[in-house]
Image (cartoon, rainbow, N blue to C red; front, side, top):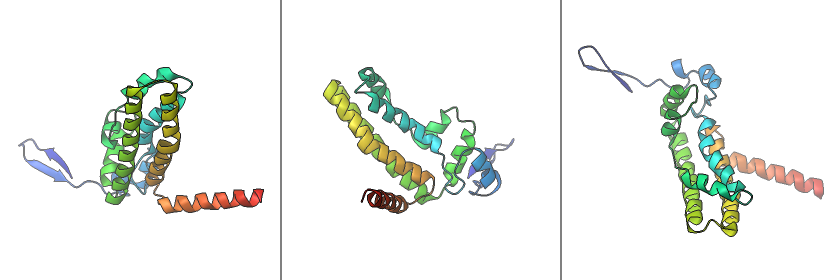
Length: 179
């Protein structure tokens, strides 16, 4: 619900637009790179992809450790509010209209990503040597990247079981190919 103040200072409430209607119509959302079914935008994942890539580069570029240590969590609203995303107001409005279970699933994944990044930061604060840099890069590849992929699936409205089934199908095809 949006609250506006009138000239006489009385609060006038307007209902939050519904996903798929009016301002949040499918065409407007698609044009803004927002999934019309979930109301979420993958642009949010750039925040996590950046730190993941820095972590993966650490073995070859240990000076990236400072950038990894400088990274800070940002929730969906904070990310878009502070971003240069062209349709950031629409992204925030669509997020509020997104189905609760979709938002909750994304938030759960984001909290897991943030915890893994914070674990990596703690490792680097303790020791930013070669061994730690390699361990942080593995953490990025083995833990954070799959979580970001799961978050992308949530944004695109794909259930994890669909991804698991697809992964199993791909693996079965590879197994059949190589006998």
